[in-house]
Amino acid sequence: MTYLARLASFVLKTVYHRLTFLVDLEAYPDYLGIVGGEDKMMDLGTIQGKIDNEEYRSIDEFQVSKTQ
View 1: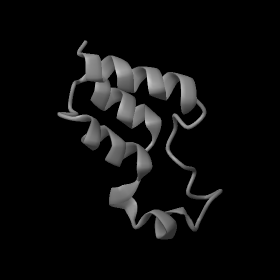
View 2 (view 1 turned 45 degrees about the vertical axis):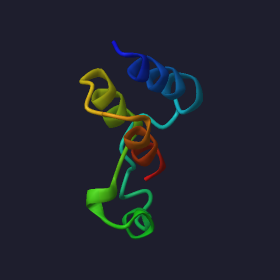
View 3 (view 1 turned 60 degrees about the horizontal axis):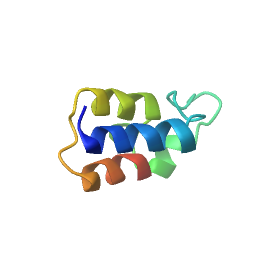
View 4 (view 1 turned 30 degrees about the vertical axis):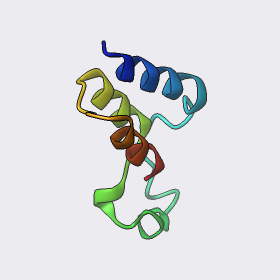
């Protein structure tokens, strides 16, 4: 695992561990309007999968994903 992947994984596990599942759209019907649509949905489980697969080429890509 690369340094970037280890760092990103650490951040996710220590800071954002409560947000690992997709948002329940029935419970939060306004969510898609707030985030800008279905293509902007992002949960930390998805981000962790991208880290594990080394899909982020830079910390900037990781930063964009976690702030969407």
